[in-house]
View 1 (spheres, one colour):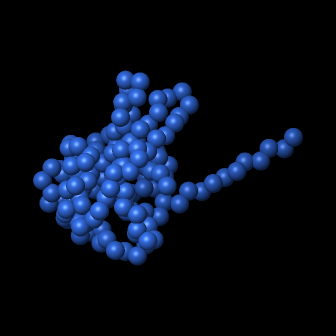
View 2: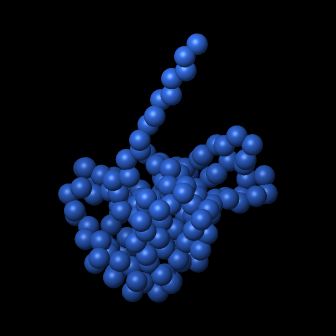
View 3: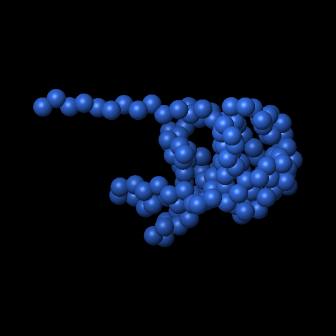
Length: 142
């Protein structure tokens, strides 16, 4: 019997910012909202189940726009079975990821990075190249 494989190519049509900010998720969401004039709101935790590994439970804040969204994801999961995992394991230094999918360009990314860098509590803001991440599929939360 002949086997067929279904090949799916994911679309990464968003910008990704990595944030080093060792503060609580609700506090960083509030600081980002205040600094950028956004309205990120707490959404249901993002859950990924794996075979032979603990479940990944990530807190997320979301702002849905007419033609896109802005999403704040915590990198480190809540501990499940006594073990915490990372959304993007190769970037354990990053505390949060800000995903910006805004085709209308309502948010200017260089200005956004400058404003986020000024926030006390955020130690570093980096624009990341999604194509270079091994576990980039974990960012497809929609």
